[in-house]
Length: 249
Image (cartoon, rainbow, N blue to C red; front, side):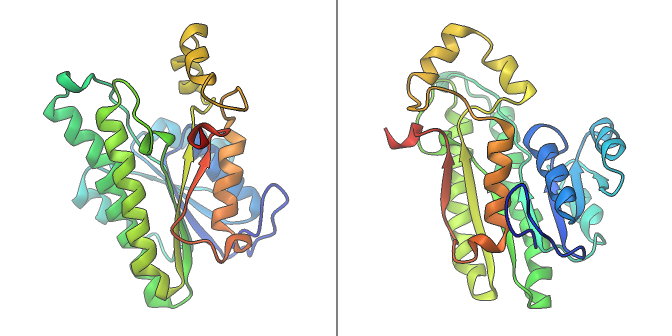
């Protein structure tokens, strides 16, 4: 398993699975590969996987729509033993509460919650059968604990993900499988930069962050690596804010 941050040591036979191949997911997959893990990257967009493999040929790509339960089970049933899992894929369809539509609601819960249940089941069953333990990190959000305008469904999915993770930690802990979440503020991915490029909009959020800035992708990735690693061997069932103090205020 990966044993730390940027200068981590790894066992080369460690298998890790990361959902998503852009933004935080892409950076996490590359970081784990640099640590020596055998990485399986899962996303629905073949072009993103092609680009990822071009950058790091050792990564195994799996292209599947994680909202399709049957297709996901078929795609992942033969990926081999997985020791570390990062559930990162998510969608955010922002709508005012009074304008929430059934299709957007169902899509958000399918990606942000239901897919986490399925992928984690598939991986954790293997961990339990092997008796070797493992670590699962679910990428949540500060929005799980604070209300944000037009984020009713997104906030609800991330709150559900936090509690799902705690129950997973409770039930899987006896098998030495740890489950934690990271809960970032706005992260400066390409999408984050686009969505928060308006200085006035950014100012309103940054004013609530004691450090006065948004998170960089590397800062979130380093937190994920820590929770995956044996450096965090007694940490289980926590929600780790990566938010510059937003949730402390």
